[in-house]
Length: 287
Ligand SMILES: C[S@@+](CC[C@H](N)C(=O)[O-])C[C@H]1O[C@@H](n2cnc3c(N)ncnc32)[C@H](O)[C@@H]1O
Image (cartoon, rainbow, N blue to C red):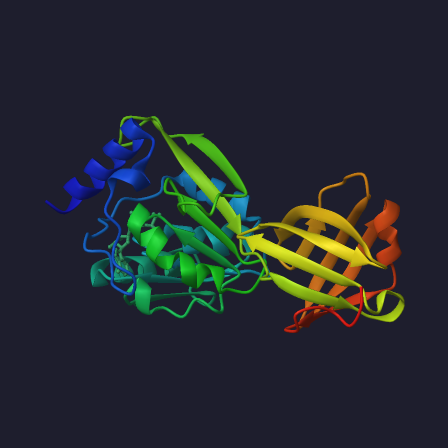
């Protein structure tokens, strides 16, 4: 029975609260062995997914496994976005196209009979998912390659050790799967990849910024005139932002191969007027 695996997964996830430890993962490069059945995100969950993504008229949403098309259609109708739904069941794609015409958004949305794993995600500024844990994990490397700032929203399932930036819970009194009468909605913002060595320019010529990154969290050191100042913080899309500490705080924005100063306070204001360039050298000219 196609839905039984989904139901078992939901039940085991809710009971154990550790679904990723009890479910086998698909081998790298392979598609998950199990199928995801058609279960809709209820209206209040759909709205919360879009609200959490902060979706608006400038956004292009891709729903992976779009079912009856509701997420893409609501994104266009209520929030002015454009969108694409990909779905392997042709009847659901036909239904989505009909609903899009009825909702008056057929010119701003598209639906394709297509395997979600064969979908080009690069045009998306928002990706939505209501799949299974192993599907999310299989997609995770590709999601992390998307443009910094792209938002990823998943109904119920997380991304393993890529912890969400936010999670909200919505009441779903008539939920058919699982024991809880609620849905979890997780949001991630794709972080820029800033790991490595960055060399100062201008007033900070010879200074260096060395960063180690794990998803959207980083720690590192600013080396200036022989003094090391430890830094830690988060990568918020294209912006690297330190937590405020005894040396003040710093925000830098990635543009190509440069980290440009967005703001600086306290001792870290010494970085004002400077830009750091990505370097593959072992160290910057002098520290
Ligand atoms: C749980 S439903 C979610 C539907 C919709 N996104 C929503 O939230 O209302 C998952 C959908 O993914 C589709 N699906 C499963 N595997 C797929 C694949 N490999 N490629 C495209 N669609 C797939 C299923 O047919 C199903 O309609």
